[in-house]
Length: 290
Image (cartoon, rainbow, N blue to C red; front, side, top):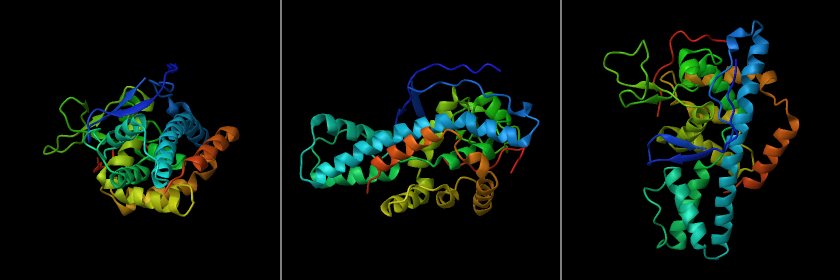
């Protein structure tokens, strides 16, 4: 199957706080999924699924870490008593809006204490989602890329929208429900939206708190700890978390990066960048491979 790839760049941006993520033209834009059902061997299917998504996740995490590094540098500057330039203030404010901390970009009249508080809040939100956790959750929510919503809408994480016509209507939707399953233009858009959801939605405060605690201890964010912060991702709650933990354990051999130099590069960026919608149900009829 032909996968259309265009070399453009990915810039996550929020039209409004709390609204859908808009991804503007930096990374490859992938507009189709491979036919993962064509793999007769389960191990080969798992490897193909993870290796297809892995570079996209790495690119988005890398872009996120660059933003985190900027905020970390701002914190160091403020703690040293140095004033911010107008350009630095504008960029910090723009990040505040993008990550749902600010309503507007007007911070020019703020004092040092207020600016520090903004930077501290951003450091809790601007951070990576561990690659293995993204991959396992995508596999879980999309039936290893085989669900109707993944194939037709590139929706790999069960994300919902609430405006009539915004996506696909689930066949099993109850009469008193109005949600639709979001349709994405590219795989990059889908992953960026999912990451933004975990980094900004109030339902995942615990997720961000666990990650911030790991950072404070000098530990890189780890999937097996952060997964407990996803208890609100599904109405199955603890059972859902247990299922993800089981998948992390059972698929460890497939989750290990095969491109070692690329992984080392991302780890190096992580070392330099450290600083101080709930979906209510699961898709029906999705193939499960644990």
